[in-house]
Length: 363
Image 1: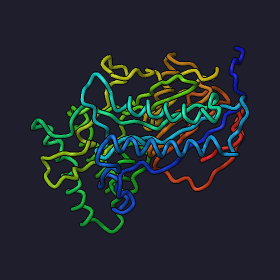
Image 2: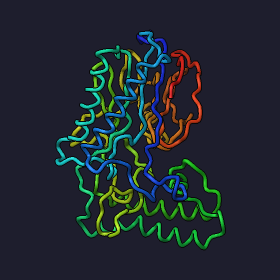
Image 3: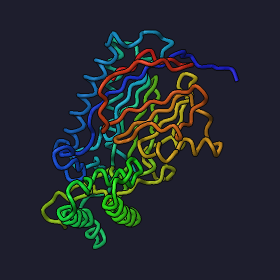
Image 4: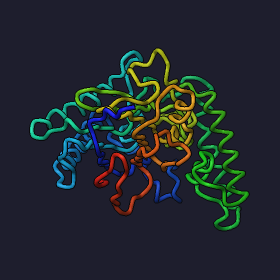
């Protein structure tokens, strides 16, 4: 098949910053014993984040390290959970309209159009991290919700007791146990294995009972065309585990034990999304996965079932995920790129990738 792509190279620009909850490093590396970072009011929080993006984008497009060649596709990415707010998700007042997603996407579009007054962005593809929104209130409204609100606290109480009585350094932090469940890490001993199994059973039960639906979507923009990619699989560490309120019956945050993701193909989705997470960009077939979807081989699964064609570029935005060779859905010589909000990247590397070479990787 003849290659009709208008690009001969690609350059990735990833803005890497931590999008994990507060206290991740200060309380035994347990990100789930913490709170979400954000301003008190969703509107103020979104405005502040838009201001950050505006500054970062202007720096990126003005950088001398970024190619000005029209044959080079520039791909700008933000990590998962960049947009979530102080409660863990932005709240919509009605189910039929996702006003918060619209507010963020229109704000991002406005930033692009403003920068376009002084810079040519026709060969830029933007993936603005992930946006978490919901129309379900955090407060418990049923007895089952009240039980689920206590599940995280109760587990942490048991964990603390067992850790205190276990041999020194024999029990890992909760964040490590969650990674063991998500197969991002291996258990070092029987304590880790048993505690992670217990936590897994608790969270699986919670997933089956959870009735608060939160959307996790990536806003994609290229040449005045906008798309939305929605995350399918919920990691065991996507939300905080405990209830920060002193009263276990009062819930002000979206908790891991109470939240689940809506079906990607659900008809009542207020935002039109790409069911198979792929799209054409200047003749290139591009696919996007959000964190655990990559580990679960979502795009590769679509490819094996004949629902998508082999990808030229596969992009993973995440918070705690690394690229996996056995999850690649690219053609021979295709490219994979990851922008993560948890792992620390110590240095920037330059590497040629054929047949669409990356002239440099700017982080």
